[in-house]
Length: 396
Image (cartoon, rainbow, N blue to C red; front, side, top):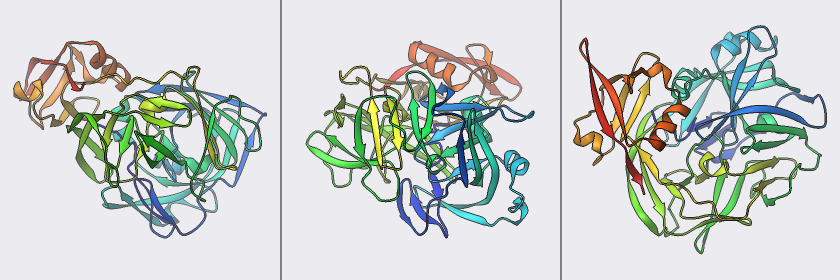
């Protein structure tokens, strides 16, 4: 599985229409009924998994619970188990309506809605949380750890939210507080408290969503732009959404990406038909503070030297994962894996001799970044056959 975007959809019918960040709102965004912070600064440790920030919280005997922070989502998602456990007394799960969601490709699905009594992150308590019920099993399998929910941007409406990637933490302050770090503030360009800001590539300006729920560097919609590529776009892996899969198109720009006082040299870009977005591949170099009350986002980095994205290395394979095996979802055209005869649908039980269950996303990505080749063990009937696949640069 290649989850460039954690959830390529958000709330649609009755409340809003959203296609990968392009929205038209019909009513106020969901927000918690009440937000309480134990002090002027609440710090919550986070784990960086790939380019995602995952926080762990324990407020009852059944925890801990893990949540992914997604500033690109207009709603919070929780698993059926968590929803059933914490459903508000005035909103029983069985009586809540189904809500239609729409993916970036225009496909739709129905998810139950609910209201949770609370979600607690350390010293921060969010009460009467509006959410959709979503089975996070595929996301959990992809990341290699159990995920209990995805916390959308409106949950933090009453706070100053800081995603501190360099120190692997999030910081919450009262919404009227001063930011903890200096930096370059950039105003949101809309009236719905959504972090869409102006960016520049070369001499062209466009708008993009600041999206911590994406592990890409830059997802770029080229409509209206004339991007110059140092590495032309090519087919990459399979991107998984709630409604199905599609192949990514990935390349490297010949010009820098600029926002505020910061520069990313020749970013790797995923071409998209939906709203452009800056994902965790770029955000992880920064401390990013979201001030919804004043409609601005502030970027801070110790150095103003340009960020230099590394080549995108790959085994040429995308997977649909289970604890017992990884199924090949697609093979990158022209890759060594294709030359070696690997096909979509093949089952992999081991990586370098270890069961796939031992390989979470972080560890596997570390292997891709450093290895010259990987030995995958393929299941053929009852026989396991090792095969060594060479790592290559998908985007030099």
